[in-house]
Image (tube, rainbow, N blue to C red; front, side, top):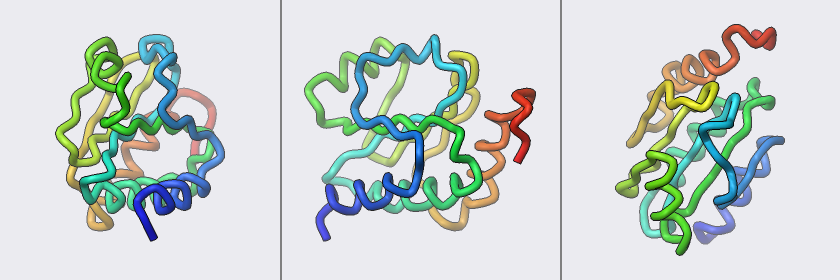
Length: 127
C-alpha cells in the first residue's frame, strides 16, 4: 500500500478532517489538531498513533498538511508552523498553539490522549 492510500485510510477514521486547506487562519480556530506529513518520511507511524488517540475525540477538527505542497512553506510561515519531516503535530486552542509533539508512536498514547483532552477543557464536551 502506498503512502497516499495509507494516508486516506487513516484519515477516513475521523469525522472532521481537512486536507491541505491553506485558506484556514489558525488564529481564528477554536479547537484543532494540525498534523504535518510528507510522503518521503515515515510520518504514517505518527498519523496512525494520532488517529488511534482520536477515537473518542471526533469533535476535534484535524487539519492535515503535506509539507511538499507548493503552498505549504508560505502557509507555515504565516501560521507560525515548522516541519522537518517528523510528523510535527500542533494542538490549537482559541487560535494559539497549546502543545506540540513529533517523532511519536504507540508508546505515546497516554500523552496524545491527554493533549486531545486539553482541547476540550472548558468546552462542555468532556470525554
